[in-house]
Length: 264
Image: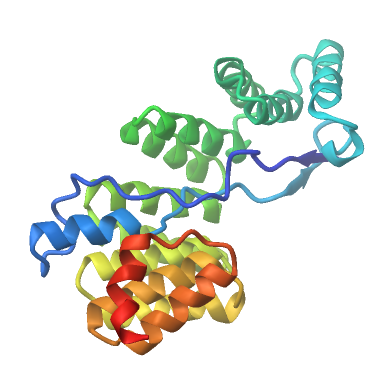
């Protein structure tokens, strides 16, 4: 069995593009920019999978990234057609910020294993780093095409639609992601943002609450829930959830904390 390793660079909230004019139609432009600046949104991490493709050691068994990279290179030399070894090498290279070589290995992974959906997701992440939303969308669409029910791919498709301001499409994709994985925290958080951007504040609050039912320590949901309450003019819960996000280590924007300070 071979372990598909999580990306080293996943799991950090990504903020919205500030030229997203289609969102938050109920707000004046200056307030819209303010809110979009501080909502946390995710390009989804790939989940751990074990797939019977070729033998491997788990990254946690390696002493350091260099040892793991050397091990993957050895495995590829022994079996150049093992898509998972190319993928795991790519993930390790991402961890040491060797992005160009990582991208080559991800393409090799998809050529060897066209159904390796995780590799398409990582290629989409590299596109996002370059600001290429269309490329990010295309690779995640390939991910869901290559593996039916791949929740992370649908979550990322929703993320890209949201960045483009195509909110209805984003909501449809994110709901599909949650259908495939009812505990998909980041998809709930991104869906809540989509509702807020559409002016559906109560739906946004409800969806963030669902995320917190799954994981009460999901800090980004506390931050985004606080923003929703702030926009609704309910300052006590806004303060409470900002404070909880801070307690959990989330860097709440000083501008937001200043706005709720008179209500403490």
